[in-house]
Length: 113
Image (cartoon, rainbow, N blue to C red; front, top):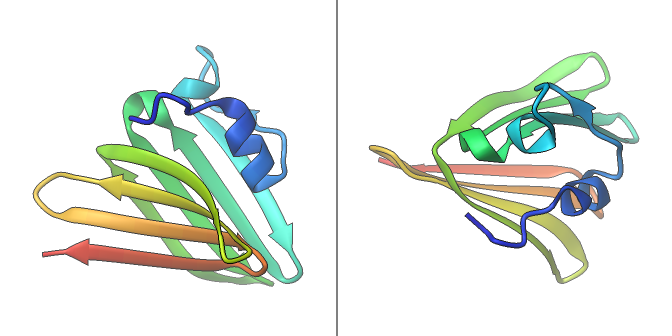
């Protein structure tokens, strides 16, 4: 796991204060909600549990909903004007997820079979 993984990185990326989902603090579970125009992204991160859950809604429609387990990398980056969170999960199948919130919402999920 990234040694520099801090709550402030999540707050800056999602531009929202977390809602605690675990009594032991944010590292065990915190939910962040971001709205950009018609898009709403609800992300629940539990770095200690190596889990990440995401919902992406547009107006009243759910566009995507998934849960990653065994997340081994959490990387915040700004690349070509895009603010992104890269997640890598390993188990029987490797998964790479790239969440972009700026300049617009985009979520790319790749599972290697």
